[in-house]
Structure formats: structure tokens, C-alpha cells
Length: 237
Image 1: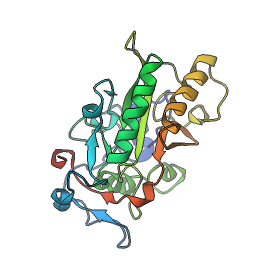
Image 2: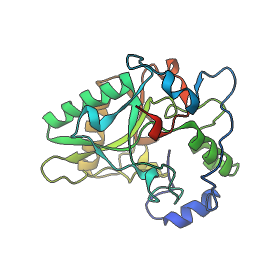
Image 3: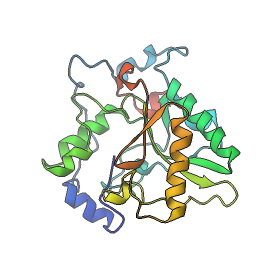
Image 4: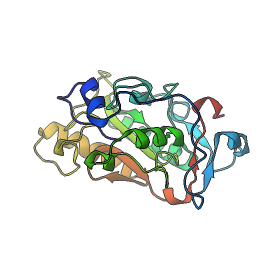
């Protein structure tokens, strides 16, 4: 997910997206297209402990992983709270890969800070329905096919310095729609460019591929094999 840049207030971002009155309560529609493998909330218990599709909580795999779950707050491009809980999950193989990347980062003096990970399908559906037709619709996943976040195979993250606890400098803020967020943008400081490359190296070594226009977004290789899920955080065991 992306935003409109650091220079626009959250309320103005929400208005620009047509999301100021975004309804976040009520019943979600049934699901995506029929040919898309889908696990609704009612089937959460069907995922067994040894099922690779099960969702694992990242901080339980490595306590050094920090959370800054923007969609559990109003500090995101919609200006609205989308998640009931500030928790981060991924499908088991992707979660274990992030944990390994975290250990790699720590060996260099850095830690991972997660902005977003698994996203229930109903949130994607509400965002899609509330975003007006136009260029910005391209930044919201179509719920008919589901997103990689819905599959537990996409993660948005950055680095923090283990010594200071502070986030490192990056070319842009999270959820920035400008060219500064592009992975090939070279107008940032040398430190920011180095940190962007460092983050990518940790994730790519563990099977992730970065999104070209969002330096913070990485997709797990093989995401097509995982189902779209609409399991609320409080039903994940």
C-alpha cells in the first residue's frame, strides 16, 4: 500500500483518496472471484499447526523484530484505523524467511521494523470500494483476485539501528507516492541509498522480491501457491 507523500497531511490524504468517510465496520462481502483459493474467517480453525499456509506472528519468531503497524493507527494514507490490533503475521515460510533476514540484519547492527504484513481480505475490499476510479486506484489491490498481503506473502518494513533504537534514514517516508519511493531513485542522500540497498539485500537473500515503486515492500517468491485469507487477527492461533 502506498500514500501521497510526506508533505500532505493525513486528513488531506484521506480526502484526496475519497476515504474520509470510509466505513470500517459491518459485514464484508463473501469473497474474491470463485476461482481464487480463499479461506474465510469461518475456516480459520481448518489450518493445522503443520500447514505451510498457517499464519505465524513475526515477533514470536524473533523478539528483535519491532512493529510500527501503521494501519492499526490513523498514521497512514487513509487517516483511518483499519486494524483492530497492532500485530504482524505472515504465512509460515515467509515468516520464517523474515526471521532469518532479521538475524542477518542484526549481525550488521540493524533490526527490522514492520509497517504491514498479512492483511485480511475484507480490509482490501473496503479500501478498493472506497477509492475513486483514477490513477490512485492503481495503488489499491483489486479484491477480485486478492493481494499478496491477503496471502500472507507480502511485507512492508524498514531498518532500525540496534544501538540507538532509531529508524535509519531512507529515501522517503513509508506510504509515499512520489518518485522518492521508487527503488531506483538516486536523488536521496548516500546514507539513505545505502540503507535501502542494505534492506533489500537481507530480504532478497531469503527469497523476497522488492516492488519497484515502493522501497519498503517485498513479496515472497511462490506467493501464487498461497490462498487469499480473510482471517481476523484475533482468530489466528
